[in-house]
Amino acid sequence: MDIILRDGRLPDGRAVDIGLDNGLIQAVEPHLPTSARQDIALGGRLVSPPFVESHIHLDSALTAGQPRWNQSGTLFEGIEIWRDRKQSLSLEDVKARAIATLKLQAQQGVLYVRSHADVSETSLTALRALLEVRDAVKDWITVQVVAFPQDGLYGGPKNLELMEAALKLGTDAVGGIPHYEMTREDGVESVHRIFELAQRYDRLIDIHCDEIDDDQSRFLEVVAACAVRSGLGSRVTASHTTAFASYNNAYAFKLMGLLARANINFIANPLINITLQGRTDTYPKRRGVTRVKELWQQGINVSLGHDCVQDPWYNLGTGNMLDVASMAVHVCQMTGQEEIAACYAMVTANGAKTLSLQDSYGLEVGKPANLIVLDADSPYDAIRRRATVTHVFSRGKLLVQTKPAEVKWE
Ligand code: 17E
Ligand code: FE2
Image (cartoon, rainbow, N blue to C red):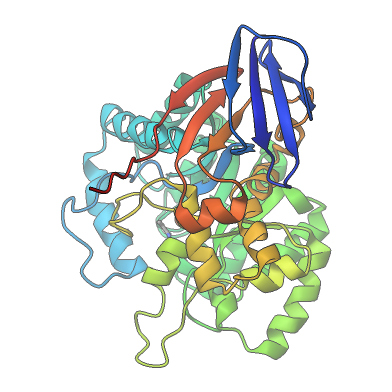
């Protein structure tokens, strides 16, 4: 055996030794009698599958304040600032920021990332750069790229053409933004077009859907209906869906039935949407995060994303998925023990399911040897203290180590 991790604790509480060899998990047992080239004593610490960042915009990461800061704190001012910033993109600029962000994520235990790439920019620089990055980093982190028409599929005369060119360049998924199209009809039409493209090019779907406080923004039902009719189901993801938090309960109840039938994935981005939404409210002020707890109670797959690390929409962000899980626990009022465990699953296994990577993800014999060790004894403890990820193993090798902070009282 190449590496044995001794006396670790799995998220479900089981105490185990884990053996890694040949890039795969070879053994997960209460006690491994064999010896290894490298023996690492975990002392009962949490050993977990890696974090999954199911929703981030790597093309705009680390641009906060360029060319100006978002004063209103709204999605719409963010889109305007980005429209200016993206005029000066170069491959080098996007690649450098994306790789710096991926390193920040990986050192905090993220080994799977789905990034949106804005394709409403005539040279497709953001997209080309992220496709190059996806390839350059594949030996240590898995990246999926979504072709995302930030200015709307019908917001400009060239946007549809650009989307198709992006798919030909090899993106993993088709994206969309129906609530930002000029009319409701354009929004509906964009969803139909996205499904058509996904089927023609055999790609996943991940749509920014109803990211607005308008209780009349109802593109989620269109996405769900298309998922049912096309049979694409679990290959489809609805991101943000913040308007769902503003729907009246009678409609929400009816919609929930359709969603369960559609079998689509949801991604909530609680860090950013708790700050972006509710900006036109006085008091009471809405939280603007989708109905995470109720979706989870229905057995629907929900994962969580950071969305942004220091960009025109959110000038904070650390890349740490425990920050995201902690914010979900608070905003979605998921403070029960099972609910906190569910929020941990939303930044790990549920994220893998959203990315359609569940077959190669998890701490089971025969799976790729991607795993992390945390300075915590349970997912609850990890979220509560935003525990340090002490070891990150990727493709069977130790990739990064971090020492927890040491406190010394005099
Ligand atoms: N673009 C968008 O439409 N929505 C967001 N939350 C971000 C970019 C970050
Ligand atoms: Fe987003």
